[in-house]
Image 1: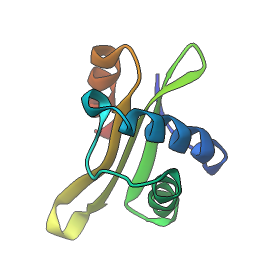
Image 2 (image 1 turned 30 degrees about the vertical axis):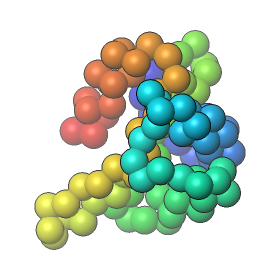
Image 3 (image 1 turned 90 degrees about the vertical axis):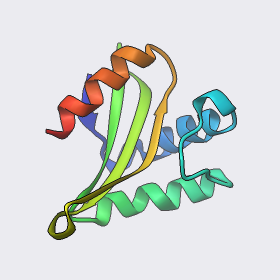
Image 4 (image 1 turned 135 degrees about the vertical axis):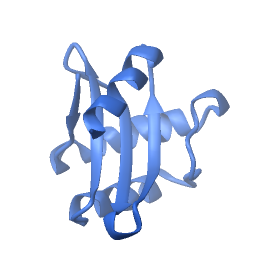
Length: 100
């Protein structure tokens, strides 16, 4: 299940993202240099009008994170994180549907 994350889940999202950032096969760009940097990036998503942090949950456990922001006037969308721990195809298939 994909849903918008609230700030109370930011620590869990940052922990998962930082863990997955350490492995080449599960990295996302931009590459973060520390968990603190992940948290700073994610905190921006909560303050932006056109940004969000989405979570993928499996059985109540956070298994994926997608962070993004948009500039609607420029028709611009950028991801700042896309991490999936398991059930990659199922999670990846769910994210695009949640953005429409």
